[in-house]
Image (cartoon, rainbow, N blue to C red):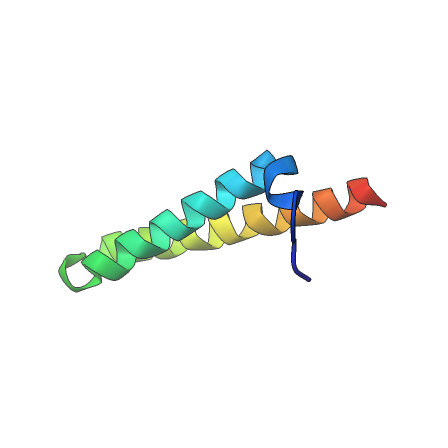
Length: 66
């Protein structure tokens, strides 16, 4: 499933959560060597939460389109 064209602009919630997910992954990738075990565990939990939010936003958009 790919979103092309105006979908990125129409589903602002999906775009925002995807941007947040990418930002988080980049942060972790840059800092993973200096992060404590507790920070890594939190980063993993946040990644899972963001992935769930992406899935929710994407599936709601699909359902809304019919």
